[in-house]
Length: 270
Figure 1 (cartoon, rainbow, N blue to C red):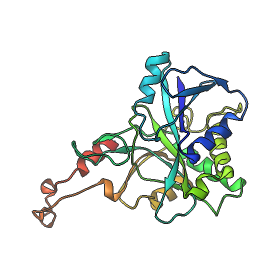
Figure 2 (cartoon, one colour; figure 1 turned 135 degrees about the vertical axis):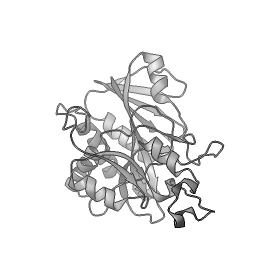
Figure 3 (cartoon, rainbow, N blue to C red; figure 1 turned 90 degrees about the vertical axis):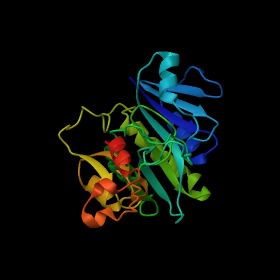
C-alpha cells in the first residue's frame, strides 16, 4: 500500500511544500507513467507532480494503481487556500461536492453528489500541524484551521488537502511550505518515527466526528478536534445542506416535504 502525494507547478503553495519535502532524505526518481506527470518515491510514499490546476487531474489514485500495480492507501494534495479575509492560514480538509445535483457544474472540480472518503489522518494531523507551526513561530500570524468538505478532484481513496492561504504573499512563504513538508515527513514516519493518524494503529475506539451545519471553517468542530483525540469525517457546512421548503412543512413538523439535496449530502458524508 502506498501514499500518493500530489502537487502542481502552477501553484506556489503546492509546489513549494513538494520541493521542501523532496529536499529531505530518501527520495528517488519514480516512473514517468503519465503525460506531463513526473513522480518521486520514498519508502511507501509516491509524490506526483503535474502542471495543471490541482482540482483538474481526476482519478490519480486509480490511474496510479492501473499503471504500477501498487495499491493506493490514501491521497494527499498540496494547494493554495483563498479567503475573503485574506488572513494567513494553514488548513486541512476533506473533499467532495455532495450537495450538488446531477447536471450541476462544480466550480472547482469533482462530480455532483460525490465525496471522497475522508483521510483518517485529518484530525491527528491537524493537531500535529498546530504543534509544528507553533514551533516554527507561524502562530499566531497563521491561523491553523479545518475547512468544510468542498471541491475536487475526483478520487476514490481516503483523501485530504493541505493548504497555505490566503494571498500570493503567503502562498510563496517558504517557512509555511517547510511546515507543511515537515507535517508530511513526520506524519508519514519518513524520518523513522511512528506514523501519525494511521487508522488501525491508534485507538480505534475514539469517536469519529461528522460535522453538520455551521460555517465553512466550523470553529466548534475545530475546537472539539484540537482538544480531543477524535477522528474527523466529512464536515458539511450550511451551504452543503441546501433545503427547499415551499410548502412550509417545517411548521407542521413534517420534514418529508422539505426538498433540496441535504439528505443526499448527509448520506454521502456517512
